[in-house]
Length: 159
Ligand SMILES: [Zn+2]
Image (cartoon, rainbow, N blue to C red; front, side, top):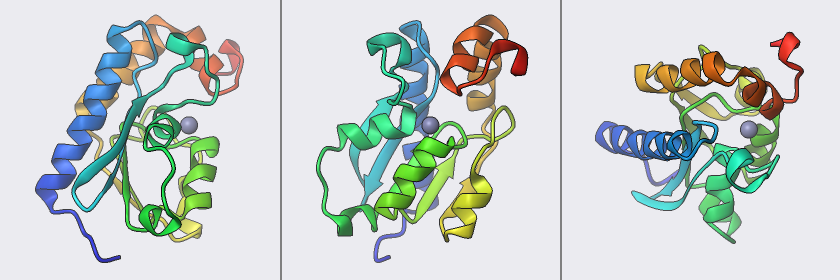
């Protein structure tokens, strides 16, 4: 990959993902956000849309990829996905399909589902354990457990 973000860029783009998560929470939604970046430019930013538009498949990551629109295969392969939470299996599938080579993950303490699969397939993961991301998730799980269980396809008593 020709483009490698600097540590400052990683920080800036994770912050952009966190802004998306905070915006979603402020709208009454699930506080998970993401941005897709290539060569220092945000191609798409998004957040979980379950509450806002009723979408069961627009998670933070898929929403950012959706909002980036149609891209060439070579662009995905030279991009980095920044997400506030460790990706679920659905978002992992999208990353693997388009061969996005690296993900910066805000945290994986409150949820981790598919990191082994991503690593097995050669995706570089950079987990930050950012306290802002953890706080957003912990608050939702405490205040709206039904919403969270719905988002990851489990019943509330299975959390
Ligand atoms: Zn997901």
